[in-house]
Image (cartoon, rainbow, N blue to C red; front, side):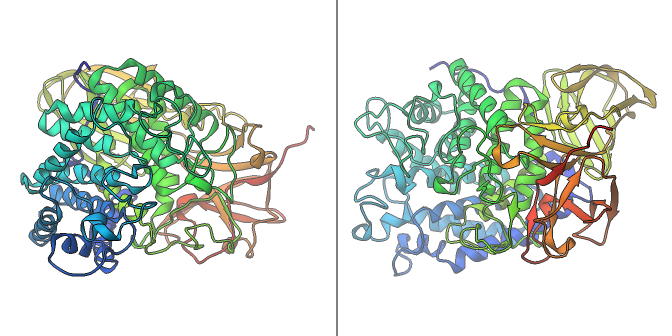
Length: 632
């Protein structure tokens, strides 16, 4: 294995990017002040934290909950570390110290950490935890859990400088490295995640063993060395163990596991230069974005196995589209951008961010969607047995994933490469960036996504030469997604407008970016104006569920209709191609949203998809019957 350098593009850390906008900053504040302590409280109430005390011998009692509940606690610790990196909090810091002490005490002498087995080894079941260590990796999440431990440990070390949790993680990783490998135990985790965590351990320690181990777990898939190929729900691809990863071309199986695997493959490819990995995830990305992506950016069509469906299998009411899968899709597309420098990956990331992910978290920050369907009758339970958003689930991977992802969101706005600075997302706030040896202070002003004007003040410490690469979203160039899976009905002639210091410029467009090479002076101002008309969206004919239907988008936002705005029912709503549509910002509605309305025999109001389900349980639809304009 040749160890290369890293991704050619580097994201600007969230610690040097601040949000000051009216859309995301309140969300991040709610995440820090409500969702974070709420998640810790639920972990306490449900016995997830007590499991570590029991494994440590500090208290008596059986293991409570599901065998992968350790991972939920680790994810919330990761979120808390991100919070501490920005907002010093002695009480939170002390709480984490006590929690980490419990992790360390629960860890067995050789580094093993899995409370479901340590608490009572005689209580484990063969078809659940496995009777012995590593005996049932297909199901038991032994390696998945500690992948989240590694991510939390790196975040905590970087935020506080303390090695307490990092030492726990390294002790465990050293054990796993001693057990698994080409000349040792040959097996793979049923749920991918450890690969991402191992890469983070490698980055922070420089110890190549962890990178080699991540690659081993990936390379081992599809080979069935001394084991049967893993299957579940009758699906040989459920755990992506049906083929070697470099031979996979179609996204199959459990959508979260798949996207975590693709994310890990991108990380390993960047660090090792393995072009076969890159070729594989390129093929897989084309398959997902061309045939298996919901308009909301969600992935995973089937409830059975929480899995991708066949090509063009994208049901609406039955959609699974798990919130964790939207997060995994964002993680993967961010890595694809870092590899290739193409804005189309950020187009997919943004679609998932504003729609498929954001719908999963309530405005209050303490209720969540597990699944995110594109239609609802208001009666059928699709959300882990429930209809509306819920405060917690027996399997609460989504709430604990939400809190760590939102805390890290500012790190997705900017990136740099050699002498280039990328602007990927449009969020008002400030950042300090190093480009071409110079320190640049950026100030972004915008009311995105409600308005399309983005003003970027560029302040190098002194005049500096570099290239600004400003993303021009695909939706602003008549393309809702970077494939033929969805298309706008008709074209819009309004084009993005770009000015530098008030003068209109026509820049080179390269890989979806407006390219502005320049000797930048303190106080230079770039303005990008993106037209925001309401666009009707039609679907590829292969998607049976959406034949003869149309959806609405405005900018990056997908819209839906709810029964509460339509006399209780949306089933009979239809939208003619020639129906005039109006746009109105309503600050009093749903924390302030821009709505789309239409007059006619069945008037309706469409709201952003992320905001649905906040006014009680009822009907909802993204795709409406289309009444095509008849030739005159």
